[in-house]
Amino acid sequence: MNKFSRRFAAVLVTGALVVAGATLTASAANADSITGNIKLFTTGSNVGTIAAKQVTAGSSTTNPMIYGITVDQACPAGFRGAAIFTVFQGGVKVGTLGSTGFVADDGVEGTNGLSPADTSIAMDESSTLPAQNPKVDNNKSLEVAAPTLATGSFELRYYCGADSLGQFDFVNDKYFVLTLNFDKTAHTWSTPVAKINTTTSITASADQVAKTATINTQIKNAADGTNAATATGTATVNQTAPSAATLGTATIAAGVATFTTGSLSPGVYTFTVTYAGDTAFNGSMSSTATISINGSNTGATNITFDVLAGANPGGLVLSNVPTSVDLGSATYNSGLLTASNPTGFSGITVTDNRSLDAAAWSLTGSVSDFTAGAKTLSGKYLGWTPSLTSGPTGAAAGATVLPAVQAAPTGGLKAVSQLASAPVVDGSPVTVVKAGLNVAIPANSATGHYSALLTLTLA
Image (cartoon, rainbow, N blue to C red; front, side, top):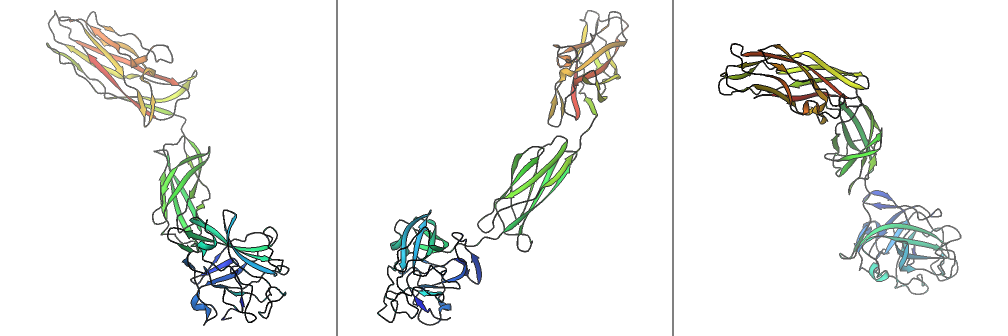
């Protein structure tokens, strides 16, 4: 219809609110609520066509707040005695915008109540008997009707009363509700903007070298599955297996985000992503994505050396120090992981051309800690067995040094240890030294390709 056929002060039924050609669904107040398609109107709705007067926002000081509505549903049978338009906030009634009493089908005061045809409603305090509804009252602006209303969301409730004398039972009477927004500072009210529903997709890939996982996220429009290119905000990355943990957040840009984990131990990992949403998009949670980080049952140890050559007066020189010794892969042996190289650390030469009154020389060594990426093993787990290939009279190999786990509480080669020594001997300036190297580490040590720096000092 083009004009309001009935007039009374309570003006709102909820269900779906039509805004700018789209229908916004409002949640029902209770199980007895009736869903309807609603349009709100302002100005004198009994003049001209109502379509040109639709409103979705307004001033909270305008009297009346809403002039009228159209709705495709009426109050249910048994609850058409009277109606009231109320304001609720936080579940508490804070005001009344209007009410009706004895409303007859013909617009004349009587006891017939509201009819099933009462789906177009206007507020009007200028009515006169008997041509218009004589029981319209309390038309007010929002701020006059509800002076304690605070900035935020609130409810407009349209109660359908069973009592035709206007005695409302707010527990048992039926009602419809629509949630609106209120800005007390700006003195405005408005209908909430419907957010777009989303879905969150997830893919994950593993880097077997770095032992990391990369999680890719895309936010999509739930309606058609297209990329939500304007979505912003953050996505939280969660690990759900082998243990639950929040790994961090990734910033959404153009609807997508990427997150890379830290180093992971060998095993199977499952991840999910939760999108928090923003002002235009609702949040959503992804399904799961699974990756595997491969393990290893062997370990390899590489030792790299910097050579500190002697340059003492008279010509004491260290040479032929290997630049690298590979101990191979550590294997399980009597409760430990061990690896060794009996010949790789050989051919080390000390040439002593000093005068006969010079002091005996000593060749010592110590090792740094072993590292494999972020993993560390103490240098005390490295040991050696020194020996001489050749040398002058009085030359001697240093004592055997065992790894700490085999000879606690020794410090292994973490402590400075002697490899060889010799006095100055006329006509025999060259001493050739070697040592078998061995490492022994706890059996539960993390896998990796470890290296350490073994430094020799000739003095």
